Image (cartoon, rainbow, N blue to C red; front, side):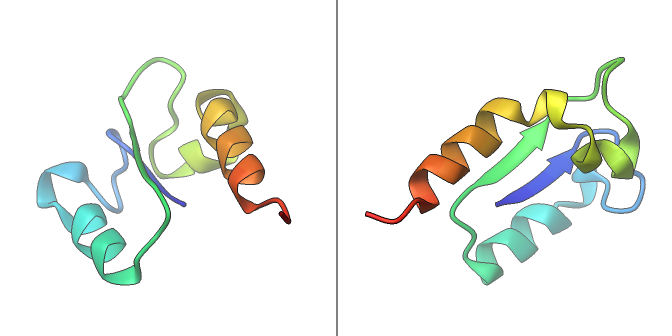
Length: 65
């Protein structure tokens, strides 16, 4: 899973780099988290609150069948 935050200052969404790199690395899912009072720029990925549902889906999808 590739996660980017709309307030990411290292990979700013307006450059389109996350989508470009995500498409070339073939992730199962690309998630753009909208900027809010709960996001933390490039560090948003370490705060699970915005990612909880996406991470739960990823774990379910990657569980052994």
